[in-house]
Amino acid sequence: MSARKIPIIPTVVVLAAAAIMVALGVWQLGRSDEKAALIAQYGRAAQSSAPLTLPLNVDIEEALFRPARYSCDAPGAWRGISARNRNGQSGYGHYVTCGAASGGELVEVGIGWSRNPAQPDWDGGVISGLIGPGGEQSYILIAEEAQADLQPLARPDPNDMPNNHLAYAGQWFFFALTALVIYWLAIRRRWREGN
Image (tube, rainbow, N blue to C red; front, side):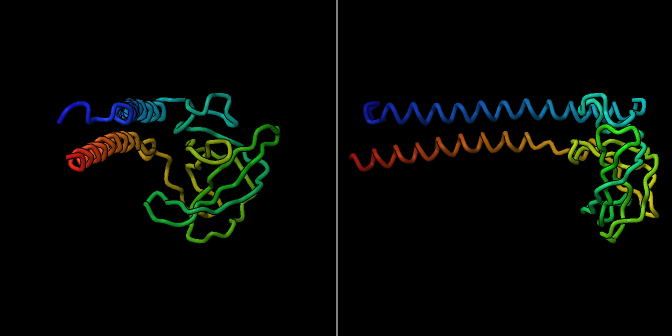
């Protein structure tokens, strides 16, 4: 087999594509380490931070999983979505978009959990809890003590945040290997047909 039988341009294209895929895999490995560090940072912040007052006057990245207080003076739109309670049981989380008497940004509050998706009877009040990811403002205040005769929702936990970057890296490496194997098989077939 001589080097002249290897097509130069397709080989360069396939090798360049495989190199890009490997680079993306390496990048995802770095992102995996960054995400693990971010999750650890959230855990430390949640344990050692003073409570925040909502609406937020800090970046959401600094606020997640920290304790906070909010006076929900004007409960607005309700939604009941699939959620878990502190015992890990599945049911409905009851969330309401609240306004404060002073006006300003609306805050979404998770007031509790039940097996019934119907809107609970709740007129508002001061909520103390933890800030979790989600909602229209990219965060939700999850009440530490459930309201309206509901059960407490599961506490937001930084360890529940997905870190899929390792899987993404594996996919990129697999794609690169697959491209090289398929190209190698195509070259071998061409050589056999040429003989």
